[in-house]
Length: 594
Image (tube, rainbow, N blue to C red):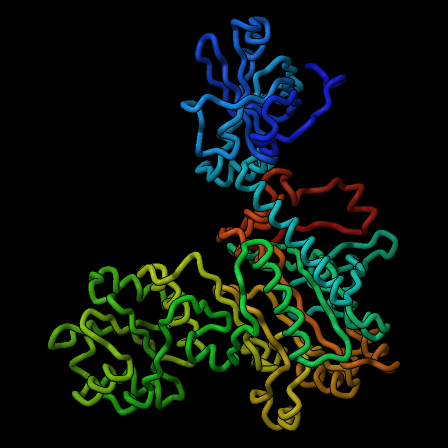
């Protein structure tokens, strides 16, 4: 292999323009492709900026031409030559440098490459498992490089924006203590404290609150967080947050500064104007209309409550459900009347995934209703159903009857499924909204106790404090999520800064005073020394970039991601360690029984 001594790169491949024609340039990168036309060899050279065509001519330099003949895909090259304009018939309008080429005068092969296990190209159709095993090759693909460059710009823009708005970036510990409430912690054994463990942070929540106690007023951090939970397409065991906290603020202050960030993000990166303030929905309204606390509002299909219409229906599934405290709600899939029976049955399987017992349906035809349940409905009920759903010929009405929680979950997901199936979603549109007034608590059926909907440091709304003892289900939180295109990209709350109220919150979720002190004693102790009103928010950086890059796979926006089993196919992490390491940590492994 040759070295680059005496050659210094002058430009990146795609940074050259027509104005540079005639210059001597030195380019370095990977051989994307080699075309041999006999007297001429063309090599497409690629670096992170893009590609440039390099020409080797046997008539002007047969020795250099022969050397170019040795080049194969993914060889690393250094090329010296003159930048020239291509002849009009040779211009490639599909590439940014399609009017240019380098007439080579020197070539060095800096590194050879074996044949890659897949072709390195945009929008690769190679198996994802294979691509993740060779992630360093996958990351050479221009589309992934563009996404990681976008991620860099998002992070830089965040730091600049929040700096301009008075935030200090302060790092918080990665090795902390376990405070089990929510997802599982990743634990790190301590060698110097045998039998004791650190926990990796699920978020810097307690530390950022302590920074407010410490008087730093406005904090931000781009930080890694860790949660040992089951994965899905938009979730990873380690993820990155843009984390914020502010003192002497209320809900409106936090929302305003973060709307400004999202507005700048879309303007500077996508040249999209996002008018503020963003629209808002209360939690209850979002659930009633969309069956979700993170609704995709790019299309209009909404849930329709028909409980009052069918409460006395002859169709017992409806009337019995309402009598037992549930509800009957419907979606109008406009144009869905053309679905085959097989397609309608498949929709029933969708809702069963979310614990619904079944899906009733009505197809609206010219002068009749086609449905297995039509014979159980009175003419008045049919008429009111059509009126309330605004149904027209060719529409498909879909009903779920169950507890509200199941109705919302199943119809909310069915709505998204239909949005895709009926092509109702404008993929080029971005819809941003806030969800506010979340419940402070939710009931845990397994543990038979109230748990915090977000986390136990969230402040109740002032007007609901009186219900903490008498009716916890009624208490709303000073909490807010920001939702873009059906993804929760950020969430936060105003925190409890009153020591007595914080202690009461712990008691309500089942902690004794001793347990609260054991888990959060350092925070409660800090609150004794003058705590400002404070609140904050954390954006999921990975999800934000995923939306900006228009990919639905979060692994595309992380350089070295994990797969569904929380493992790294490239490094084979996690893996076993040797006995000596375990002995030092006073750990013995045991086989897990199935």
